[in-house]
Image (cartoon, rainbow, N blue to C red):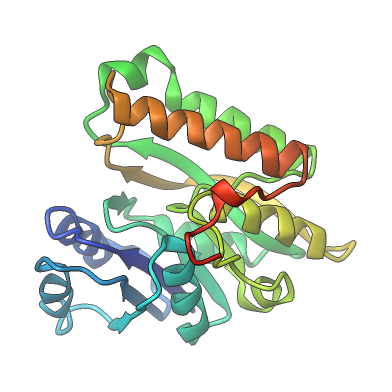
Length: 243
């Protein structure tokens, strides 16, 4: 049994594809989708409600802005012992839930991260060999015990998530990276984090292009990675304005 948390903010153009992917799952166990509206002003919530007759959907609202706060609200609302996370602009593979359920049957598995793919890949993504680079990065960082989760494709046992104190809701970025590091610190000797290549998702490529917004996004990401992973710091610029 798996709870899936999907935070969203003004994702009316993407969220239908995200939800439709859950109508095609090969997983035969029980699951629930917890959609967390983070103050949308478009028709995103209406689209979510339209799936209420075909999917086990729960729509909740989180007033505090930021993906960390929205994700935390979703995890706190989860009913099942395994919680997975994806994004509203992401399409999960038909075997995604099945892969998660299967892997958590292995003894000692505390958390999973999986293959990060992209739909309609841009020239920039191909130049960067982005998908194999992300896989190498994730495998390496699990090996050196500095796991780097990507927020739209990971899963964790609920008990371990709360043992690690959940998401740091002060953060405006790198909340997924920060959570992975704290889960690693909270593990017992018999527990481990696993990279599962069969746990596949395909996210939007909209951020990736030779433009100023992509450059800013990338620079901020690497700065946050260096500060949190290698310096163990969370400087004020990584936090929300109400920090």
